Length: 125
Image 1 (cartoon, rainbow, N blue to C red):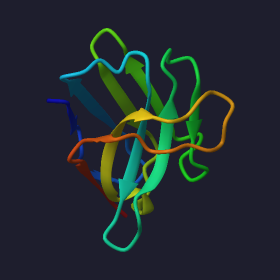
Image 2: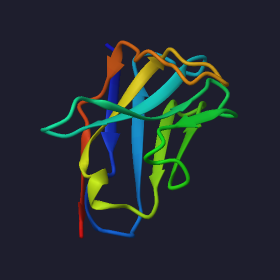
Image 3: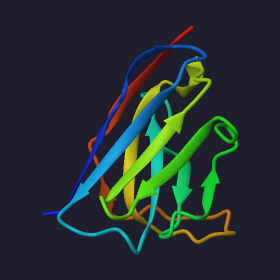
Image 4: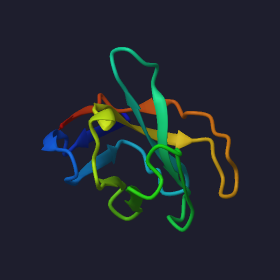
């Protein structure tokens, strides 16, 4: 059974940082691109960041570029999202996505079939 489990969410003040983790089990994603998405009650799930299989290439939504950093540890089957300078508009449930269809250099992507249950991030002003 393939599982993605996010952790690291919480309540934080604007301007502070949080790092989310995604632990994958049941399948290796070391050859796949991975991504982070987020969703609020009033918006559809939106793309946040992607990382290619090697970890060498990344892509970010305009809203988080320069503030968020996606990384991975292929040996541990883990993906991370370091979120800096958090803003109230970053408040959402954050989801890890496995086997994201994306390659370095592309600005388009298709979400993969594997999702975690999400971790909630709340940023207070």
